[in-house]
Length: 370
Figure: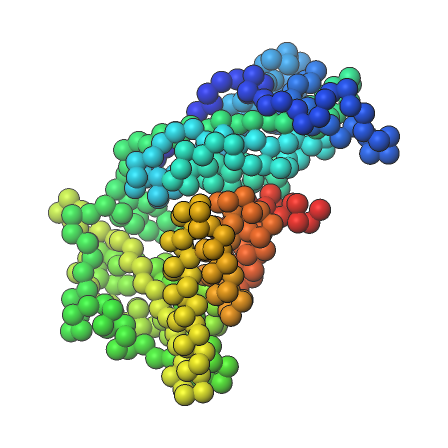
């Protein structure tokens, strides 16, 4: 679904009170570490206007437009917000350091539905990709607090999304339907999938998420695959082979009377069958059930600590489960437990090779690294 982002007012007028009085002197060895809300010249997003002999106001106006364009290209409209028809203004505050990098980004206002996190991720990308023109006070660069209000507004969606090679429809009158002899794709998959023998010795267990494309001619390709437990190539090849061998056992989706390509998602849990591994399977099922219960609990602020404690116990049993790490990391990030979120997302990235949180990791982990 498309969206439009707006600035609500000129940015310098929206800056918050500084963290320390402007006349407070920092130790000489450290220089002035005050974070200012007002300065002789505000921090600016870099634009071609900086090369021109023009007024500070003109350069600030160019900066405002450029920041808007930058955020507009990077902030996605979350599925949860689309589903619940949520729109509104997210407000993100951050500090532009003397060197022009940004730090301490945080959400000041969140309309819900993931809009605040989406805005934060777009801002976080600037930490590694953009060097700002720092604010100036008494002829010297100073730290400067910047506040960015971003308005999300829903518009009528297109019925499809474009991938690298395909037009994938997300709206259709008739969904893709499995028409094989096994009656459902789940039955077909369970009948044909095999646990690779290479995993029995180490009792490997875990989940793969596979996104298929069911094309107009009934052929099946794999669009994406996520291995949350680093099961390895034997497991991913097994899932891919079973999925793609369902070729010609599908009736394609239809949109406005014509056949179209659509996505179909399936989760595959691989569990070893040998008697020596049954305790591992039992423990994994218990941990997965605990994570499901904890996700419900953390929606209630009164049960947040108890829910996180339940997640901790599950992850203590399976510390290298990327899916568990993502769930706890998201919960921690949503509740401003940024150091813990940094840890979980880093582990998940190493295990599952995901890049979903790359834009926000620099800001989540800045305090940890420092």
